[in-house]
Image (cartoon, rainbow, N blue to C red):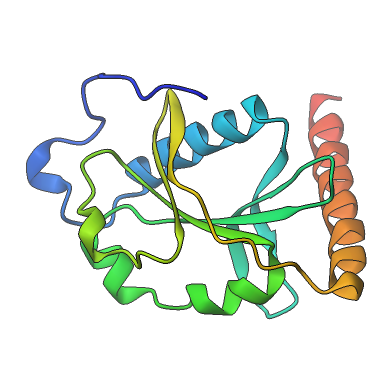
Length: 159
């Protein structure tokens, strides 16, 4: 499993209490690296049928879906309580936070990833709750279509 670096924080300490996109971007990068190391294919900002958008969705070779909700600070966690709506769209659910995040405010019955821009580590495994078979099939196709469309856009930009 990937190790967390002891690097200098991206954001000065006085600004860490406010939601900051730089913190979330660093966490997302580390989570994406972690899942790649674990053999998952992952996408950021994946649209769900519940008219929500998962921060990260990952799929392994067994067809298991993982959703990761990134929280950049205490205020971000308290203001955004839509995460329970994601549970019907994954086999396992994790919160991902920076190393200095106040972890005690997170639900103890959900998975926990600590990440920074260099990588991440799973501190607490998520409880497995198998996804409905029909939803798994539809979501697998949706993931393939979304990834393919994004790749096509990148290729188009490259000329």
